[in-house]
Length: 475
Image (cartoon, rainbow, N blue to C red; front, side, top):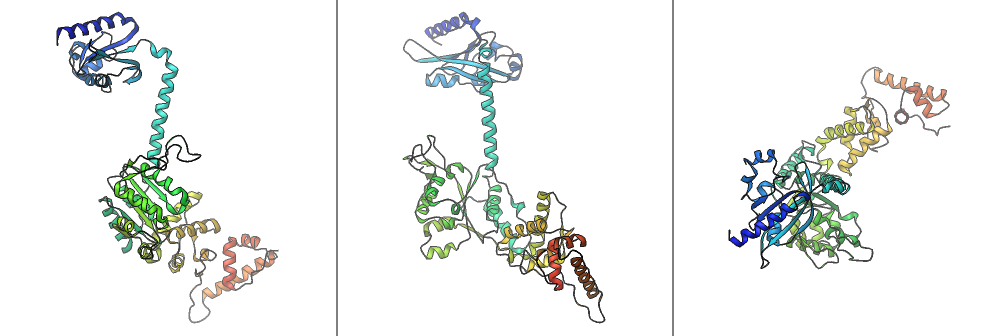
C-alpha cells in the first residue's frame, strides 16, 4: 500500500478512535472491501463468531473480505458506488444495529475505502421504531407466505379420481404434460373437472413451486378483460389508482396461467393474447413500457374451437398456438364405471361438511345413478349427493331418495315372484295399509304421518307414489 494511502487510513483510524465513546463498533475497509481495521469492542467480532470463522483473534480478520465476517454487509456497495448510507437498520444474529456507512476518499476524490460504525445505545432511543420495523417485516413475510399459498396448486394427479380406461388415459396425459413446457388445451363439457386437471398438470411440472393463476374469461366483462390480463399503469383512466396494478400475466410470472372458457374471449383481445404468447411480454393498460413475463399457458373450453375457427369466431393462429397438447376430458356418462367411487367420495365429503354419519349407497341407488345421463357431469353428481343428504334421512342412500331429484330414477320396487302370493306382495299390502291407517289417524297430515311411521316426509311421498295412494294437500 502506498505511503500516502497508509497515512490516510491511519488518519481515519485516529478519527474513529476519537469517537470511540460514541459508538458500539467501527470497521474500516479498503477499495477491495477487505477489512483493514476494527476497534476492540466491535460487536461483530465475538468469541462465538471467531470460532465459527476459524480465527484466533480479531487481528486474524484483517485482510479478510468483509462479507466473510458480515455475510450481509453492504460495505462493498459503498466502495463501488461511492454513495454513503447514513442510516440503516441491520440485523446480525441476535443484534439489531443502527449503522452508518461512509465512503473514504483521497485528495483527488477517488474512493479508497469505506468506514462503518454502529451508534452507541442508539436502539435504546429508537426502540419504538425498531419494534415497528420488526413488526412490519414479520407482517410482510406472513403476507408473502399467504399470497404464495393462495397461488399454489391445490390438486395433484392423485386427486383425479377414477379407474375407467378414459380416466387412466387422462392421468397418463396429465403426467406427460407436466414433463413439457408447451401449451395445453383442455377440451370437455362443463363440469368435467378442467381446472382440477390444470392444477394437476402444474403440480407435477417444474413450475410447481411458482404461482398458479386462473382466470375465467367468461366471467369478466369484456371492457375489463384487457386490464385483468395485462395490468393497469398508474392513472391509466379516471378512477385508476396511483399504484400500478399487475395483471394475471405478471402474477403468474414463472408459473402457470390457466385460461378457462377461452372460447368466450372476444376477437380483439385474442390478438393481444397471441402477441403476449409469442413475444413473452405484456404492455399494461395506459403504459408505453413492456414487461417481460415467463408463463406456461393451460387453456380450457367447453366449446368446439375447431368449428369456431372455421366459422371465423376464433382466431386460427391463436388456436394453433394453444392446441399444442390437447387433452379431451370424458363426460361422466362415458365413464360410468367410476360412478360408484365418485359417489362414495362425495358422500363422505358431504357427511363431513354437514357433521353427519356417512351413508353408503345401496345397489339400487347406484343403478339409479348409472341410468341418469349426467348433462352436468361431475359437478351435477356432487350436487345430487348433497341434495340427498339435505332432503332425506336414513342410514343408507336408497333409490327412492333420488325420486324428487333425478326424474328418471327407478323406485325400489321388489321383483315379482311366480307362484302363490309372494312375501314381497304381502309386505307391500301391509305397508300400504299401515300408511293409509297413519294418514287417517293424522287426518291427512303428511308430516305427522311420516313421523308416526318413522319415515322422512320425502320417503313417505315416494311410498305414496309407489302404492298409488292419492297425494292430497296437507290440511
